[in-house]
Image (cartoon, rainbow, N blue to C red; front, side, top):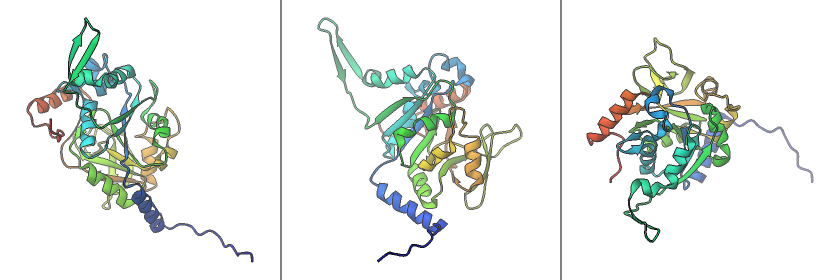
Length: 289
């Protein structure tokens, strides 16, 4: 007997949310990968970045990239995909010789031997991807798509630290079913400007203007894989057309963070972070030595 077929019904917004929650439930045993943008030129801190990529500039004797990864790791996120570009070999050499950078070492030159002491291993898996020298932020994210697949992932910039509740961030992202969540902060205006509704939906996104003093994009994002469809090629700036489209389509949500947040765009900001670290009161240092 032939079965009659009707028109396929459109999935309602509620059904889509339920479907997304089911997918999250299926994936709950797998921690999301963390993508870190670390390929830019760092021209605003050229005193340091002419020698190394900005994420490799040191705070307390360790690259700020390391500080970011340690922070994520404390919340159980250990799988990293690093988007490289400018002076990428510096980052690759750091991880290739990680124990040399973080441990005491004895070199027995007569017998051509090396002994590493106190070689604590971080529980990290680190994938270093050449995303091009002049590729824009959206293009870099697009290039790492093969390493993410059809999974939600976290994304942040390799030059900023904070004490945001990453567990709360992920739970909030799971709860609303939208494509993207970004951590938002209030600060003297320097970054992209957001218009946020009472339900935390981001209604518009634009680049900064001199007269602004509003809530800004602080990085520390959670993205569903659908975000890749908003990214065209290497010239795509993630903070421009893709975010504007996501906001216009109601797919961009704000997770407001009123705690510590600091980027490192200038020599002064680098010195501020160094001072905080040396004081023993760095707000992002939540791990034990």
